[in-house]
Length: 137
Image 1 (cartoon, rainbow, N blue to C red):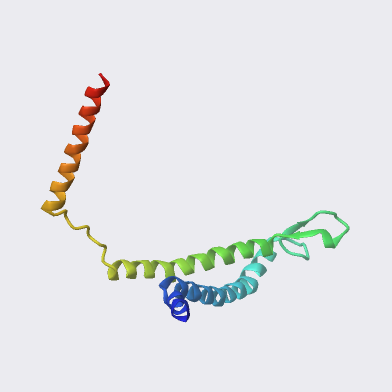
Image 2: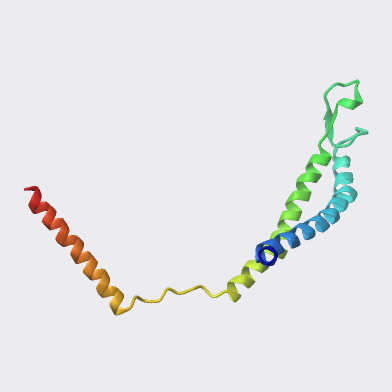
């Protein structure tokens, strides 16, 4: 039972997934701090004279109804940046490395005996079809 569990853990997919989760989490923290420190202040300046930054207020006299677009845009930038970095830093090199290391299996040509057996089976099928046609007349 423990041997099967060990084999499961040692498969490439489980280890790749664990590395991707750890790397993604660490990199997400970096990207989030960059967008909060750099992108959101820039987006707030695009918001004009509003004290809340980029967005709009649903009711004019209620500040609690302000819809902030800056954090939504920042989250989108976070997602695209993390996905791009994970793809170009982890996925693409690993795919390239696997394609170089793992040789594709080439199917061997059939032997003469296998070809003769296939021809025999085809002839037997044709013969039985002709017999069925004659019986149906």
